Amino acid sequence: MLYRYMSLEKHQKEVDEWVSNFTPKYWPPMEQFARLVEEVGELGRELNHMHGSKKKKSSEEVKELGQELSDVLFTLICLANNHNISLEEEWEKLVNEKMYGRDLNRFEKKESSNEGNEESKNEQESITEEQESNDLEELEEL
Image 1 (tube, rainbow, N blue to C red):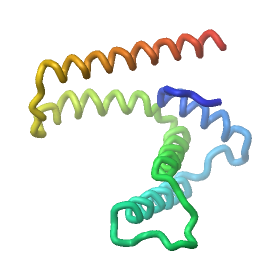
Image 2 (image 1 turned 180 degrees about the horizontal axis):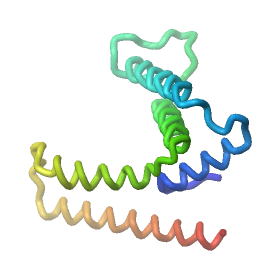
Image 3 (image 1 turned 30 degrees about the vertical axis):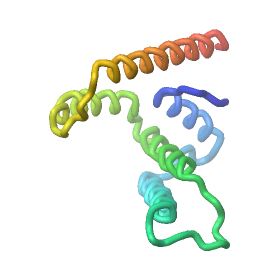
Image 4 (image 1 turned 120 degrees about the vertical axis):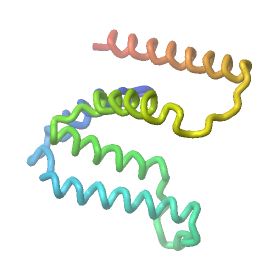
């Protein structure tokens, strides 16, 4: 099932439903961690090919950066699910404590004009409306 916008909670549920088809449902934590390190290594290798001095060999398969990021996310979701951690709740805590708390004035901010702020606000409102519409469609399908 493909979703254009999906919450972390929905990703976690989708992964949990899929892994429920296998035994064991989730690998032991240290094996999951080893897998995460492997996936992050593949991500690093891809970034190095793109931006570093080590370019791909002609014999290496083509991999996309987005796919490598998704592999890391999938593995993190498995690790969180295995420990009954809600990534949605943890994300909210992070945003509130760091982005809108500790780090709110930590970094230099860009100069902005009212025009740019209005465009950004309108764009965000458009995305939110589209998200709500997609959510309603999804609920109707259930």
